[in-house]
Amino acid sequence: MSENPQFEVTDDRMSSFHWTAIGICVVLNMLDGFDILVMAFTANSVSAEWQLSASQLGLLLSAGLLGMALGALLLAPWGDRIGRRKLVISCLVIATVGMILAGFAQDEVQLGLVRVLTGFGVGGLLSCTNVLASEYASPRWRGLAVSLQTTGFTIGATIGGLAAVVMIDNWGWRSVFFVGAALSLLSLILVIWRLPESIEFLITKGGAGALDRINALARRMGQQPLATLPARQSVSDAPTRGRFLALLSQPYRRATLTLWILFLIMLFTYYFVTSWSPKLLVQAGMSQNSGLTGGVLLNIGGVIGTLLFGFLSARFSVARVLAAATLFAAILLAVFPATLSTMWVALLAGLLMGLCISGCIAGLLATAALVYPTATRATGVGSAIGIGRAGAILSPLIVGRLIDAGWTSTELYIAAGTLMLVAVAAALTLRIGQQPPATGPTATSDPDQHSVPATP
Image 1 (cartoon, rainbow, N blue to C red):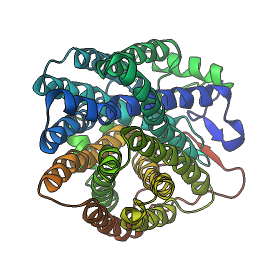
Image 2: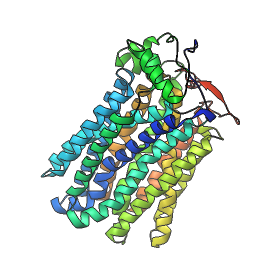
Image 3: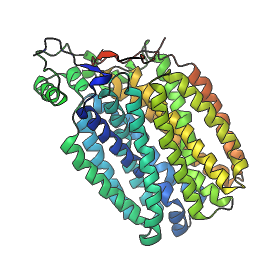
């Protein structure tokens, strides 16, 4: 039995246990992608049935995002108190109930309210799965693990978009929500059966039975059990307000504020592109199926982008890769309207645009997981996502009003590209100091070992 209350985790000791935990996080993020973008998939059908204006549709698109913001801010901190696994289970229950109720909604008000409920569960779930993927990965491949987990969102959105075309044509838009509820229920069963609690959380939290639970997980990983637990971090027992204020303390203030700005801009742009592009493509003269195809290609590009970011982050600075992806996204947004006259060029540009924007999101999630220690990691990641959701909420609302006011697709995309240039400047100020070593690093799973404070 080991006298050292740490687990050594190196890049060549990532076992099937670690990859299974990360794989479940990917599956959960696939579900999140389906659940949140289901409103974009059904937007045209819902709008036609209830005769909604662009502003009313914008409210519906924002409802789930409002719920996500509330879930990320209010539920995610509980992951630092009751554990990542318990919070994941609770959030899945909430999301499942919300999807079922959405299928029975009789008007836009009812649908909007249950979309807030669904988003509330998804918001807490996204924060926790990102943290779990980070905590079960070795230092060298942590960026890839978080990118894989992020890829799940775009994979879920892509599959959802393809399936939505068939389901809406054959069974109507309500069937999409019922399928989402069934998938949420299956995911809940999978989590109860196979998802482990974070060892870093158990070490940090301590308490009765913690050592036995840690050693049980250690045996499954092929690690030596511990003889004793390390001293607990006092902040883990602090109330939510205390942990939130810790994010603005001297070692983390600069990185926290920069991350909030970046999440705000990135999610505003992401949800503008994913929520409105299918509809704007139809307005530009394409068929409804071509518009949905454009939305699917955006998400396919997103899958490629998040994977590419993961591999690049294993070789280069996360902050530099993030800044480069943001710059390319800004350029593609600005030129995208010029491609709309030729369908295959527009679809290719959409694929590349999705690649860069989703790469940016993956970079932000990887960065957020690196900045904070275990005791405040769920709170830190959740707060960044929650602040970012303000941009996601405002995006459909603002764009809907601009469309009603007569803005063209060209003006909208150029404005989004300009906003991304601001994000480039913010990304260049990040000083995370995360440069993976070239060969087999050895690091402990000390809760603070891989959390690198930003330069104050």
